[in-house]
Length: 87
Image (tube, rainbow, N blue to C red; front, side):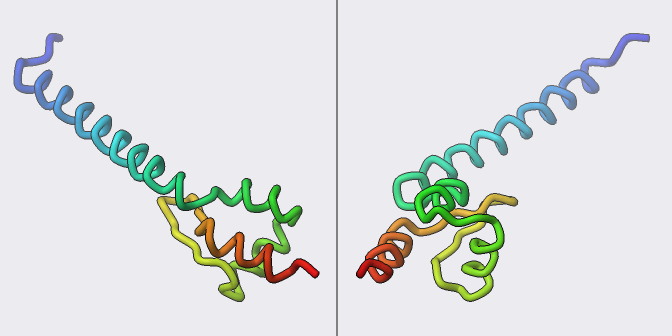
């Protein structure tokens, strides 16, 4: 059974909307990349594990931005934490 032109156009429109959302999410992530660090990057930088990062999140020690399920940490707040912990 063949699809009508309207069904085909609706399917194309739906696909285009999904692509548009993906591009917007990618652009948002790229904009954050210069000022913000991914959770994994912060963990490696601080040599912290999941438990220590969860404690930091709970205490609000670092500035956090969420994009979807991803967490990003403000680079300046991470650097301040590193500087304050140096002896």
